[in-house]
Length: 253
Image 1 (spheres, rainbow, N blue to C red):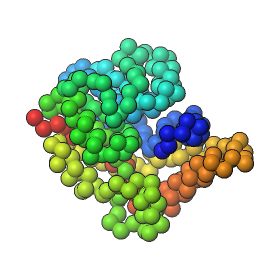
Image 2: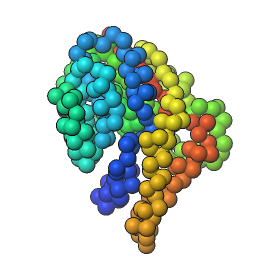
Image 3: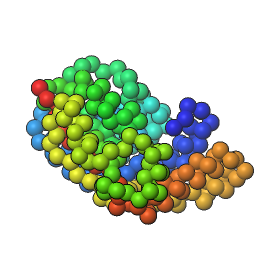
């Protein structure tokens, strides 16, 4: 990711208008939430890196509590505000612009911290450490993390993720991080392949020809589009070797 405002606008243009900004689906959100079996009846939930809020709305449908959804992209937050205001759930959804690396909430404020496809931005080790303080004793943390599903992935896909996400680990490695950071893992499961395609890669791929035409002659923008094409191609060719794993854990007392 870049801090260049122009390039950030291009990234947003590539990602805007999609149902999700990363792999996920409503069924997986609901499955993970069901693992948080000992939540209070009206929990206080923090959704970190909420994007335009597909999972926020899914959570609000199954969680009879207040959800504070945070992101640092105002365009995504405006999308979520529109979704929320058009639903009967708006009174239980709070939308706030926050930097996930330095959030302004009080220690022990939440019963559940949730994050789908965003913990990698600060790194899972840092996320588990810094977000832990926001949890009440024995509160829950639920995140998705990109992991290797096979021990020896082909060189091509290994080199790709060495560039894109060098901290990527396998499932046992991530489980060990939870233990080291003083969490008790409740369970984890792999998102289905459809969670990559239905609401993310398929609609994203359909946008690319129009983006190539729009940015013809703009080498920086076209490189971002080409990078997106490479990412989709990797998933199509090597999808059985990596995936998103949903981890649900509890803060140790």
